[in-house]
Length: 153
Image 1 (spheres, one colour):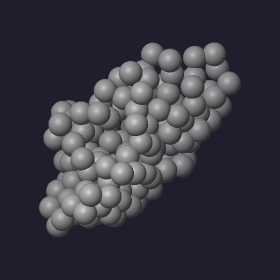
Image 2: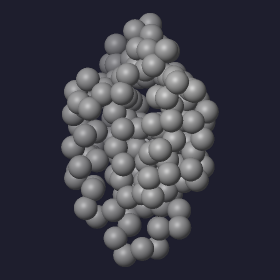
Image 3: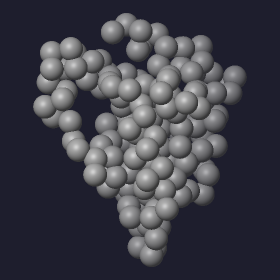
């Protein structure tokens, strides 16, 4: 399991957002925070990812995209909802096209609140997701993960 801690690969998807959290996610990759020094790699291919970072709320047009990306990430996987829009829909939750937070569509493992979420909080969320991945990996090896897995319809 040490390979997750040494090189977690993440994929980032922007739902319906103002892009404030997206800028902070990108700030994590800049020399100031430099998460790549810890082995974190931002990939564009869900089949290579371990952690799914999502910013913004879920709207009626991106439900299928989120489910599709989630289904392509191999087990074990972790999902991080970044920013209050991804957590609950925030001020947009009463809009006609907003369904709510990410957990309305897929299971979320780590919530990182904030508007916009700070890079330090995002990095902490990734570290927490590594712990979730460790647990899921051990459950997968023992056969428990398939018993508790939620069906996505």
